[in-house]
Length: 377
Picture 1: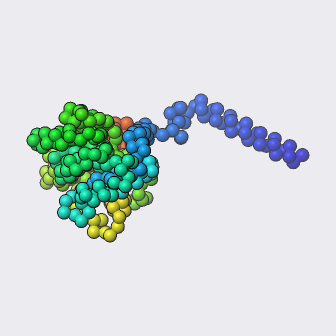
Picture 2 (picture 1 turned 30 degrees about the horizontal axis):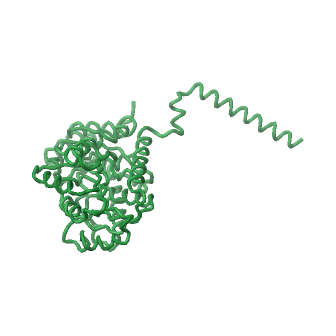
Picture 3 (picture 1 turned 135 degrees about the horizontal axis):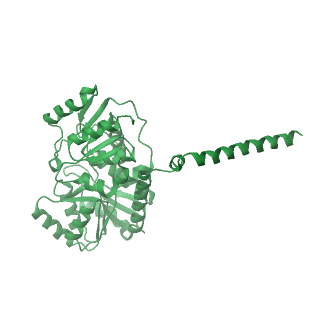
């Protein structure tokens, strides 16, 4: 009797649940129902980019067991550390060991040394490859390219592969020199992270295969943020670069006055800052990977200072997208690195899917930032 009563009650409960689900399915918008379990367009796009990176490099590096990865970023630009962290995660996933990783600047004790590198790679000769660190360093803006050209001269007998880069040359003579140096190598393959860079690579370095791939920091999307988010210190973080790459200057007195006029009258607070301001990591006696992870944590801490950020740095845009932080990407430079990347990979992550958008003036940025914090009517 008790057994029959139990099953009778269970059947009634099941009937009620099925009826409720049928009613809700008919009454609720299907998009609302799907939102309970379906990822948004941005999540789908980012996961597809991770799959693209893994599939490409698992094929490109098939049979490779050991690599040299040039070069580790010793500077305080946290974006390059995010790239490095993504590269190391990919190589770990592929089961590839990094046996040589010099720093990116000369005059450091562990800077690039051809003899040392060859001695380390030689035991793995048949299964070794040289990898070039990704980022915005293919060109004449930074010293890494000088080191890269020397590396290509020093290792004509080793395959060289590139992680995704942005190419930009200001000096045509330096471009011609790069074309000549790269043209002499028999097994060099390049990767671009935006369509214009891909076109430039194929135009000037057409002897070598070039492909379009997302930035290596994208690999971090499969992980949670480095820490839980603390309460914001200010309403608006104005992340204005101080190195004037591409002519971008967003920390002038005129722009400060503009921000005060537009934002502070509503009782909001703001902060001008750049993550190049300090580097507490370099002096630490820890491994390169640990330094990169610490810098990644600093990036999270930096970007979460405000309720919403306005930034002209590419990796602030990328990391804020990966971590789903409200932000406005501001592009006004001749280099167009930020806009070029956004167009190639992050349009699916813009409004209304995520609280992210790209603009071309500080005035537009201020309007967009305020709208992100305005509750919907």
